Length: 224
Ligand SMILES: NC(=O)c1ccc[n+]([C@@H]2O[C@H](COP(=O)([O-])OP(=O)(O)OC[C@H]3O[C@@H](n4cnc5c(N)ncnc54)[C@H](OP(=O)(O)O)[C@@H]3O)[C@@H](O)[C@H]2O)c1
Image (cartoon, rainbow, N blue to C red; front, top):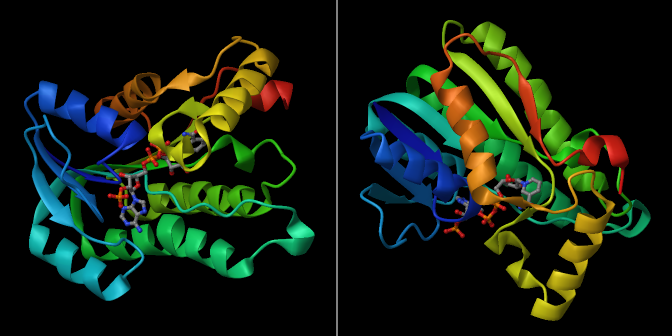
């Protein structure tokens, strides 16, 4: 099996790539800086928001069994004052770039998108995140119909402790993660490995398609 992980150099994507490596699959890690240590993988340097480069890379990759998308671009803040350029970048990175990749790629088995709980549960400051993740999930369902028998699914994470939060000062980040942990039904935030296990389920269960799988510790129910 050949699996291409866009956003596979960190967090959820890297944890999922490690499961594929352990299963003996051929792993390709695609990101702007894919030089992660300790994984037996081909590495491709690509900014997924660069449509021309995306088409070149995916045309050259040849047949792929599985394609996984977990890139992220941050665009938080109150809707009234949100930086719309940042919001557009989030859409270029998480929606339009992967859309172009799907057009250019020759996928044989399945595609998994990583969306996010904001699409289901409103959070103050999360309007752009909600919009892009909702768009990803809507795209996923239509692709599941259009690209069949290729299966297309999404995992929707809640708050997960990954390097994605490292832009915050350590103290602020830990306080934020603790606050979410206390408000969640499971009493803690998630791990990259827990999300990777869900990605792996969607990659390997041949009877699941068109599904959003929430892995969020109950976040969508509790609206912390
Ligand atoms: N962690 C959470 O709490 C959480 C919550 C809800 C949803 N999610 C979603 O889960 C997914 C994975 O998140 P994570 O926490 O694993 O994030 P992460 O650790 O920050 O990893 C993000 C990955 O995306 C890659 N990436 C970013 N911009 C890119 C670009 N323009 N082109 C190509 N690759 C790019 C990064 O690599 P380079 O920097 O090398 O490009 C990295 O490999 C994201 O879609 C995120 O929105 C996460």
